[in-house]
Image (cartoon, rainbow, N blue to C red; front, side, top):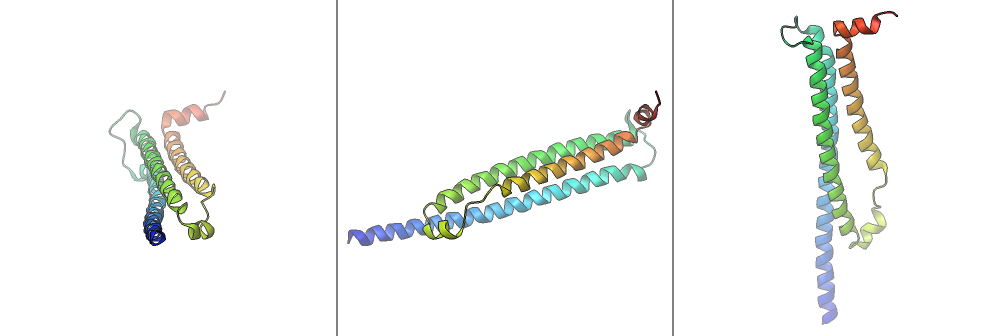
Length: 157
């Protein structure tokens, strides 16, 4: 009789571990999708900030005009995107820990579902780099359109 109770408890623990494992997998899938969406929207924002001054009328506000405003907005958008990507990285790490704890209680999953390797970190780094590059180019394009900055760069020795 005690062996049956032990098996029942083990079975129940495995069911719970499997439920935790599946939930963590779904959460990670969702967070990964969000990382890509944040990166895509950030890059679209940077492209728009590089293009908008070409269609914008004459600057009526600000010391640096339309290009300076777009360069500043690019910096703010980049900071926002980096903050969200970092938050999603932390959430993924938390769910990975849950998944690994559940995996340790599920021998069959340990056998067939290997722990994630460093590829996940590489993808996250690439997304961060894409946001940085987009922000950098949007900033530089707009700053170089400011007449005083352009004159400074093109002035000969």
